[in-house]
Length: 359
View 1 (cartoon, rainbow, N blue to C red):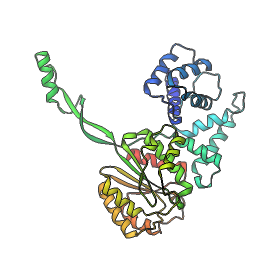
View 2: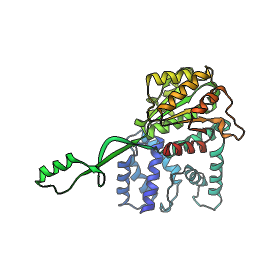
View 3: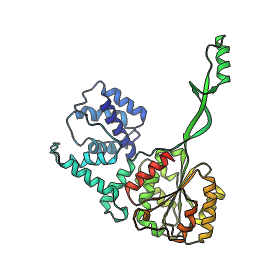
View 4: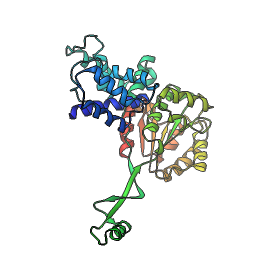
């Protein structure tokens, strides 16, 4: 039963990444339905998922595609434990395209090897089909988030005395039967992401925006995204669309400075004057080709570092062994950074997700 729960939970995660509203409640309804069905029959599993996980007609085409990709036409019992790694999903999908559903022991390892190679390749050098596959895998990443202590309290077995609940219980029952306790609740830490959409970042801008979309979809209330180039543009609202393609189309309509220059210093000054990054994780995705005054950028990076919990700079060129931060923008920003990480491949985004989960 535990293997069935893991498999169907992984399938629900895949649907959510594709834009289907397969939330926790719908997943529990699916598991309850499967308890009365034959899980070795693909047709029964298909219809149970379709009736419980889909919210409307728009979800049906996505559901059909995800079902075909996730289960690959197997007629055996759902015994393979689903994992959160996108490499395994790709291996199962590619390994089942033979038509008869039989595994000769060579296809799946080959598919896994191709996926592993694709994870480490520079997205700027991929073909359109390969880039689309990387974007699909990017949407399936598990985007955890570091948590912070909230000012709000929640009931707890151990902690400080909750006088109000204790007195309320005593008045209701006529006696102090139990001391109530409480502790501070936790909330996801805020992430502020700046995505450079200038001309030098054009080969990476779409992938970065898809990564931003996945962050917003995971924690919509704890993520803010801005595009930077010659203007500072908030794009969080546009990225809240469930479908990545729709979200990127909306983003393209509101960004006025695609493929222009970069004046990050002036834009950070505008951001710090209008907004706040206090206690947040600030992530700047740029190659550091600053068109403005590097001294201004250094000053504003210092202000940002004093506000933010952590400042992470994502540079696509950092993924190469011979990279050195020699541009004026990078040299000005470097003293104020907590991390300088790569941003050129799927593996680099996986490592960035881990940093955000443990910052």
